[in-house]
Length: 158
Image 1 (spheres, helix red, strand yellow):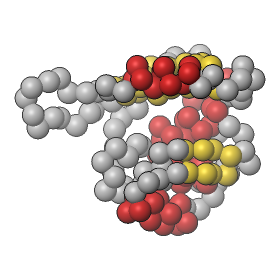
Image 2 (cartoon, one colour; image 1 turned 180 degrees about the vertical axis):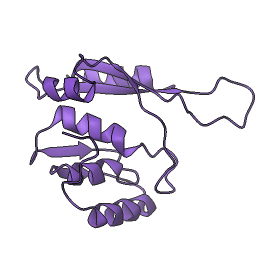
Image 3 (cartoon, helix red, strand yellow; image 1 turned 90 degrees about the vertical axis):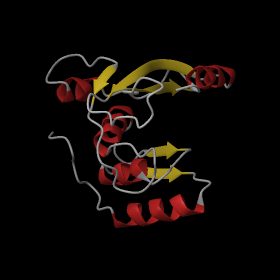
Image 4 (spheres, one colour; image 1 turned 120 degrees about the vertical axis):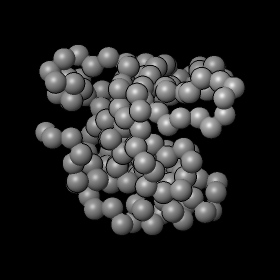
């Protein structure tokens, strides 16, 4: 939460064009144990590109959104983690991002790979994947998870 402004500044400093900010709303966000702040129920996702020529599957977005234009507020429930990584994202969130922003056989890059959710979903959707992770423990979890993933398992119906 406290890094959002810094990320936006860093993207602009490195000549990225910010296309959208997407708010992921988790109506079932897990409760906080502490009682000194509000329960965080949203996360910010930056959609950015080095150029104004980028891939965006508008028709897929409409299909996923029941024929309506997709908004930047995505209500997707939080899920129980598959691994022990503390900030693991749900696969259906990453599937939406990958489906809208890439074509089959293209390469998806995740500079903060964590437990490999992005890589696993990219493989399921027939994309190539490159990921970086500084933690050896999480890298091994991600490597095993991605290696065990079968390609072309669809989470959304086409």
